[in-house]
Length: 162
Image (cartoon, rainbow, N blue to C red; front, side, top):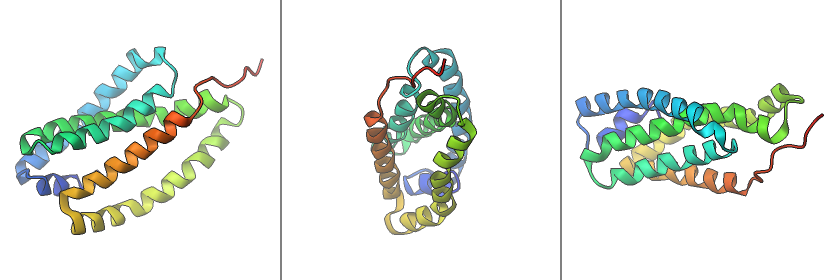
């Protein structure tokens, strides 16, 4: 999404200058969300963070339906979701599987994601060519599917290895 964000925002009604400025909001939103995660969400089960991250992007896409004035809200929600997700990628497998073979498990779990990321710019570019700003709804649908999958994961912590 980051590669195509200015183009997508333009297709959602933002001027090139607005798209650039709004795109800049994503980074600070990521950092702020990581700070909130570290300060407040650590008190809860680690699955809460990725669930929250998965819902923030679709919420942001929902704001886009309100018109170009709502584009900053999208950027902030999208950025916050990305920020939380980067932390959750490491903490959730640790909480679910424990520390034994942690690096190996991260590699196995991350491989499909990395392969999808390799082709995503091309696929997303085609979606933009065909659907314009409607491509946001594809990414929102994927995020909602991830949310459903995350809600199906049991929340009990891994068995103690003591």
